[in-house]
Length: 162
Image (tube, rainbow, N blue to C red; front, side):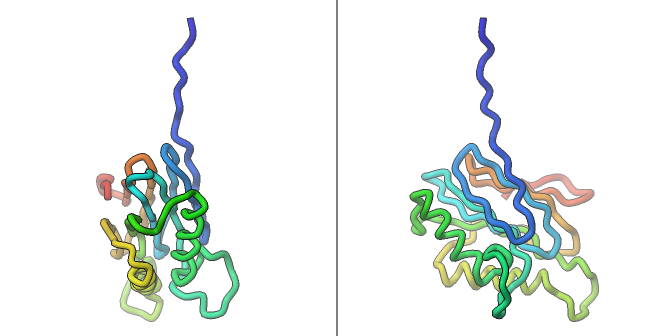
């Protein structure tokens, strides 16, 4: 008598400035504060990428392409092309961008990240189909390539799907 084979989804933790891409049943996770978790997804192909974007603009600084909103989207598109995924048909979901430092002071990086990612998506003609951004609370997210959904958890609140 043999046991049935169980295929658990492959999970990848996407850290600061990183980008991961894959196909169903892959799942990608991140923990976000002012950073943006940007998921690009092709529903027919069940292929997606998740970027953990730290800053709105590279401004000539070096770093991995996933670190900056102005370089992350293009790099994600290229990673997806390597998985035979066309740009046409991609959708986006955004999470994060919290104001982790409180108040109305000069450090409003979350808001700047939201604006920069939204502009990059608009330039690439990628439609945003869901978002959970802003506020002053960090998030834990899981992006599932099988469904394209992102599960968002915030402290003291029930989880929600985008």
